[in-house]
Amino acid sequence: MRPQYKIVLVYVLVGAGWIFFSDKLVASLFTDPRDLTVVQDIKGWLFILVTAILLFFLVKRALENAAHQQQKLIDSYDQTIRGWVQVLDLRHKETKDHTYRVAAMTVALASKMGVTDAMSLKRIERSAILHDIGKIGIPDAVLIKPGQLDEDEMRLMRTHPQIARDLLANIDFLRNCMDIPYGHHERWDGQGYPLGLAGEEIPFAARIFSIVDVWDALIHPRVYKQAWPEDKVRDYIRDESGIRFDPAAVAVFFAHSDVIKTAAASLSQTVSPNGNI
Image (tube, rainbow, N blue to C red; front, top):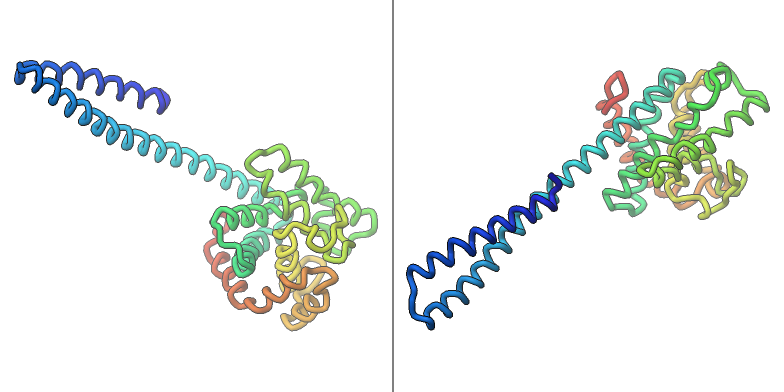
C-alpha cells in the first residue's frame, strides 16, 4: 500500500475509534449538559493534538522511507556508473586509476574554489568519473594504439565528447553530469573541441577538470610516453595558463596542490582491484 493511503487509513481508524469510545466514555461519566459542553470542547482539542502528533510521526516515517528508497536508487546509479568505468577499463586499462584520481582531485579543487554544497560536489565527482565514457564508442585500434595517432585517428578520437553527450542526454539522472564529459577538451583560448568555447563560456566543472586531467596524464606513464618530472608538468601548466587553462583555476590549483594531490592519493588507497570504492 502506498504511504499516502496508509496515512489516511490510520488517520480514519484512529479518528473513528476516538469518536466512538470517547463519546461512550463521556456519556457514562457526565450527564449535566453544561459539563458535557465543556468536556466535548476539551475532547475536541485533545483530538486535534493527538492526531497532529500521529500525523507528524506517520509523515516523518513515510519521508524517511522515501529518502531511503531514493538513496538506494542513487546508489544503484553510482554502481552503474562504476560498471561503465570497468567496461572501459577492460579495453583501456591505464584509465582506471586515472579516472578515480582525477575525480578526487577535481572535487578537492572545486572545494578550494568555493564549491561547498555536497550535492554540487557529488555531481562534479560523477561528471569527472564519466569524463572518458565516450571512449566506449572508439575502436580499439585507435583507443589503445601504442603510439601517436595520425590525423584521421585523432579526428575519430575527438568524437568521444559527442558520444558521451549522446549517451548521457538520454539518462535523466546523469544529464546534469555532462559538463566534464562533453566539455573537458575545450580550451580557455577557444581552440578546443567539440564546440570551440572560450573563457567562461566553458562550464566551470570542465575548466577545473581540464587542469587536473592534464596534470595526471603527464605525470604518469602512458603507452605512448614516459612520465614527466613534476617540475616539467608544473611549468607546462603555468605556461598554458590563460591559453589552455582558466588562469584563476590554475592559481588555486598550485596554491593548494598538496591538498589536491593528497585527495587523489587517499582515494587511490581505497580503490579495489576491480575498480570499486
